[in-house]
Length: 342
Image (cartoon, rainbow, N blue to C red):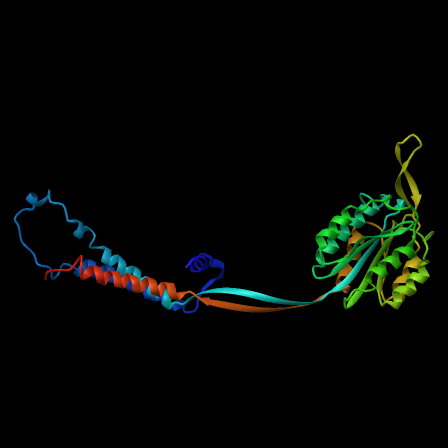
């Protein structure tokens, strides 16, 4: 009985298979009017010149409770009409078939990523836009690799985006030995995808510099990516002005803004991208960086098929039972407690 009550209270999933039956509710006021209009037509009457002598006489308990039979009849009729309308509780189950894409974000965390040509600086702008990208890729497995003078897997490829976002927010410039090892960053990202089972494997590599260190050269990393059929999108970060404001530390510990050169190896990044079937982008400000990630998001769409099944549960039985109980109780009272002599 509890589940029936909960189903009736859940208006969002309650519906009626035959709602036209509610028109029969008009019978109830007609029935009440008929009882009020004709209930005393055939009753025996005694004419008196005055009723003042009877004013102190109170109706008996039986007389006062006699309308209970009418109430029971109305409840029974209302319950039968609602049961005839066939109330149903509906529920929807969904079967989701997703061809997920495995993605690794490879982000440069070298000291130059603190430059402020993007706001508040390059690395924080990259983290913010990457977070938005992750939130939009619900069905994909995504990992995070950071690199500067060396590379490190910050988060393996996972479907748990909450953990991934936590690891992304923990990224800071200076976590690794300084430098720009683009080859190491790319090779580590490809290695994270080597054994995954995604239909498509993608690396999004973001850097603001020129490869100047590392154990694996960019050309070798490119060949490794091609061997494992990993598509690489590369993003070069830095303004077109040739210089960017950079917070430098003075010998006495103060931070002063200086201008540092913007030195992005466009040729290398374009070669890596085109060699793997990807594209190279140049991000010169926050808006262009966001647009780049949105473009990649559109190009690397995940195919998701959703099959919906609607289930119905009939709820008329307890109403029919209530109507039968009310009618049975009315008949019992009519032939026992409220039985008439005439």
